[in-house]
Length: 198
Image 1: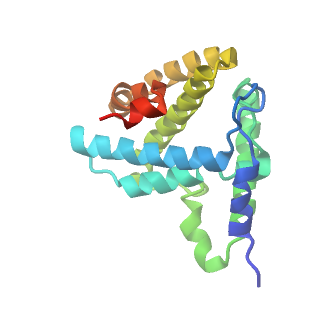
Image 2: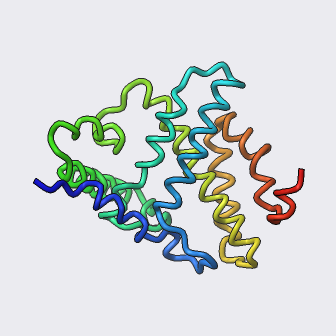
């Protein structure tokens, strides 16, 4: 029997983000998920090296890779719509749950359980519960990077999104995220030549 899961997952590259914004360069959820995975991995390493953590950085990256997978089915609902009020959040949560079940249905039975936790369908293990806040921070940092890139291209449509996203990152109160902002984000303002200089 032909299994559809990975063929469907490959469609992440067709789902564009920031639908309500004028984009200089379009960003799809496949690109965003990879960047979020890079950042989540780094945040976990920062926790382990600098804050005496004992989290699995590779697992953080894996959770981040799949964190928006349901948007293949739901599309990327803009944040102002998704979080308009509690009723909207609850309805969207139900839609995401249904979309996750549909994705899992595309897997053979013997692999389904392995993907349930990656897609947030089953209850989180203690390990994953410690990692999801890092994934959330990485998701927001990726959004901040998009805002910075758009503003560098002269697109002021992202000005308020940049401020709101930065405030949301600070509100998470994660020291790892603050380290990333301080040490890594400034380089996103550099030109390619400036980045290449030693």
